Image (cartoon, rainbow, N blue to C red; front, top):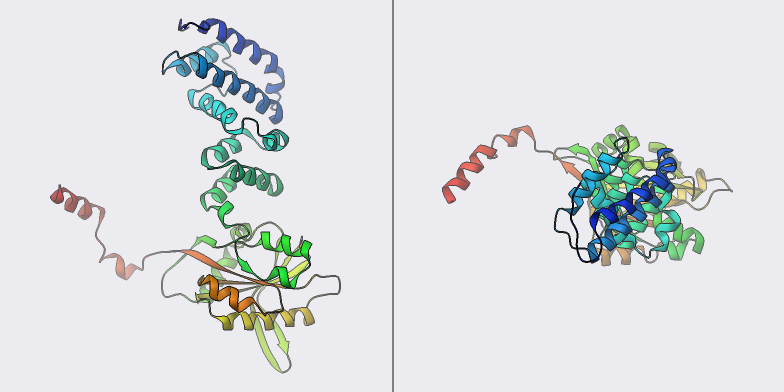
Length: 341
């Protein structure tokens, strides 16, 4: 055991207090009650925070603490130096944060580590905590949503919902949309067309639904509608369980142009007349393009009488085989760098 001391408190006395706190929580923590584990980590984090502010024992005091606790409690996990650092960080990140105390115990510890180490602000952390609880995300899904910056994308699509939907429906519909949508589970080589994207989205429907968000139920691809004596085919048709409405998604592998909004407006009218039931809310349209000018898009939606939003979408594009041979290899790049040096 380390004999580190200072003018405030001997390390051995402080360690004794930590061990006593662990013993008091040990039975409850052993039951794997997440809220109790988090409460214990909070108290331990507070003790370490207060210690580091008043007892400068050098840079290695957390190594000593990790070693001493693992020796004293060999059957308990969570006392590695890395985890102790995260426990201290938990307290410092959420200090005096009421939101965390209300909802933090509803998600596992490893989720909290993912959130607090990747979030830049408390608001961002609150967002991921709430979304994890609502959607039941596992840690891998949470990590993916953070990696693709869901916090920055959620509710950012340009839309006309405030003018075409009731207030309660408008707010919920707006939060349903993202900008951009990130389809990084697709790998396509150029040139590719809307049908190529559609085909792969349906082939990866589970990941596609995850990116769309909670509440979307897939209805059909190239959904057929007959208007007058003409046939029309919707790229993708969904039903949103929370919004209680059909959602038409049109894919355009080009920059947005105003004509796209007019065509989607026609499709929404057709679905409202031919598919929607009396109990359904008005059909919503989502137009996904590779690029858009925000001012032009807002202008195009201004007098559209059907609810729709416009977002960009991103793909992972792979290099065609016939071009790979013309690209430098890693070895060639390294050799050129050596020459420069």
